[in-house]
Image (cartoon, rainbow, N blue to C red):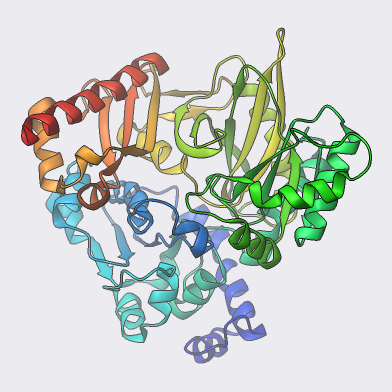
Length: 517
């Protein structure tokens, strides 16, 4: 397709049409040159259009406290404004308080906040409804026009998104810029069923399980098969194909199951008693989601000492695979499946093991055309002499470990040493962190952004550029209504980062208790 044809078609191509797909592929073909010529040059002019849309299942997302404030997680990318000729366009569902923007801009190393602010364009849909941000933007042609006007030069611009669905693809086509992210046509590779298939093909150990569960009948058969193959199996986990952060998971207990005949009938009768991780989930809603998106059933890996590490990778537009981090996930919920936060890096005793296992799958994903950041989650059990690792899912998107790691990079100019699995500063010192999106307490409700920043200033809760350690907050907008905030605590060791996190909680609790006294 010629440039003229693309320009003529870009205004109103039908969603998902061959025209839209052809335009999108032509836009994506710009990325290798951008990556070679623009990305490595700190002084190059560029525009980054950040669309922090959570284009995920909205029913599951609605069960996440303060979900619409998760659009704030990618504010870490404002740190790109330290590049003096970079422009950023950041779009949100509702306007962001200026106090929050000011907080991030004053974290910038070596750039006056006013200089950075001139290169930042904030746009909003003024829409708090429960639908993806990208859908809201697409429904507003005048907003799209303003977006296009704000892009100084589309030839040096790209979009960055939390995840890339057909909505983001349609938006990229309307804006005439590529997305540094995975083509939506490849998203099935990152579903629970698709991930198991890729991991199996790569030779990475996975739990015993069944993919392609399409309805309750399939689920009964899958659970029955798991139990018959392993009579000692105590529990199984059922996962919605497009679930995230553990919110689409449920536990099935085999306690009291018949040993011989009648197993399937017994399982069918027990399905309404599934233990759901998502708050307020019911069997009726869950079974409808199975029919809508499919699911898997797999053995629940038991163990007295269990960890949930993850490894993150990036496939760049030139096809290079980089291992970019490992984390130990901090989990909660009824059966420790809900993502609460993470420690970086993962435990020294196994961080390189999981990184290397994940690389096997990364090569297959690269060969299938995957682009951008993704993570692979593991479940690791100590058997008394060694760790046994099982890969449990692939996430073809940014995740809960992405924004804290990006913040660490931007604040310190350090780098991840994949040979040691450590993050090193230019001085050679190491840095670790504890990060959470879920520092939440009823007593924090009513705290405005200005209140939080006042508490931080009075108690020294900030990032110290001289020592290259300290505290950075995010999800600040969720505090007043939900009593919830995110935090990244950077320190020389994991233990010190943990201690800093506890200190922050102590300060917030003390300050709020005093305010309510």
